[in-house]
Length: 432
Image (cartoon, rainbow, N blue to C red; front, side, top):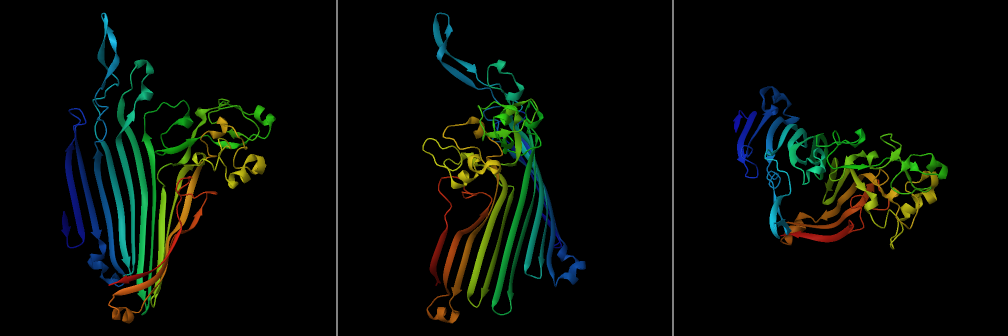
């Protein structure tokens, strides 16, 4: 670590690690990292701006890290026992046999990251920070099953050739200031946008629409729905859908590869991942005037996919004593016709309608009022006479409002399990 004149700050780290998970010659990895910060506000030429710009810094950092929790069971060939035995001469004897092809060349999964950021403070009240980063992961462990024929007879080898790029932007701001004698204001906001992209993976797609390269990790995949069959003539004049026999009101899918048949080879990437939202944000506001106060915090997320079809008893068929929601009923083909969002009502399973598709995979977005509080702080003179340092009366609420793009359900939970609760509390707080 080195700092000069309160303006230039350097950090350098170098480390070497070895793991016994890997074969000899692949156990060691070197992970360097470095960072630089320039505090511009401490420069002589910035003295004239001190009245309104109390702090200004820019940052640049980069480094490499690794993951050794791979290869423990796949860098070596495993032996299994045939319990029933093999015939040796005139008797059966237990014996060992290889159950997986080994790959002795596996090594650390590596991650290289670079980050650039800026921090500044205005009028001794407003703090703003911004960061942009790029990350590249290499040597990701993947099954090599796509490269080996099943004629081999045992489980295919693994190879550490996967590559994923990630990048994003993170912003944060906070304002806090006392205005006049009695008014105090505070506000804050944050926003993160993150995206990843598969640079390389082991695959042998039969058609271009099936490739994972260029798409997201854990992205939602499915068929593209282009409507619902109107009548038998519509069915007869459309490509054959192989999942099940279809009827008017069933989902009609797009033939992505142009082979005249609709099956799993017509799946496409549907736009977003299924686990972590790409967009997260929050903002809050607080006011206090002569003991009366108000605080509110909002939080939201978006740009990730959830499957409506997995929500049993809300979206789907009326079978096995299951229900459907009023939303589904109002928007099914039988009721809504050409404006339908969902296929026809049925009391039996229809495989064609249950395929993963953009009918069921939905890009979920929500904004919620997480916390809200109204309070009154008792006068200091009265509180101190009672031997206390602070006392207030308050009303607090949690999850009182939700704005989302999912009907019939809470977009955040999206299940019939334990729901997100709304609550209101009224109380007194004393500090002695």
